[in-house]
Length: 257
Image (cartoon, rainbow, N blue to C red; front, side, top):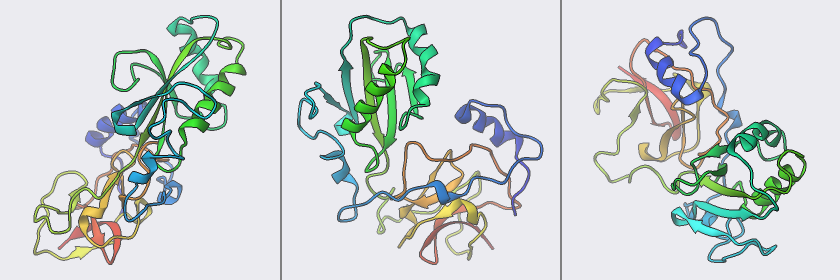
């Protein structure tokens, strides 16, 4: 059922992955096994915007480091004290070493602090999986381990991503399955599940609980992660349009007849 990578979607994937589009033979697609299912409280993950995952209303971490809450608790900015300032080029050059440190695989550098124009390090993670205080400690350890940036003044933004609720309500008439690429969902048509089983996962009661994730190739329950999914960004073509929705109480890619 899987087809060769489609040129059009591959060009879109290029913007997401930062690499070259794959047009020839390729390895088996990444499965949904790598996707975690963070805990929910009363059907929501909003509780993960409070302690222990974030400092809550506190103005400082447990070790006394001042912290600023931004973006309704999804972004936390701290200034890592040091004796010297660094040029952007020095920090960029050190990113490779930082990414080798435990928990810092997804650290980056640029204009990412709370949506402002400040230059800083940015570490992204998923709600309910990444704790702000632990993330700051990991970055501190990574900086201290690199002689090129040890002792530098660096601003860090820890950003949490993930869905707080389904994409639409069950009683919303417009809450329909989401097309993979093109095609119009037929409300009267039957659903043929299992089209892209390796990229489908999660329990559901209705279509709005199923969402596209991982550069758009996965159809997963809204409870699954959001920031650093272990997904690839290839584009795929199928004999007929497929949709992400709830089939047999599971989020699946399906076709229609």
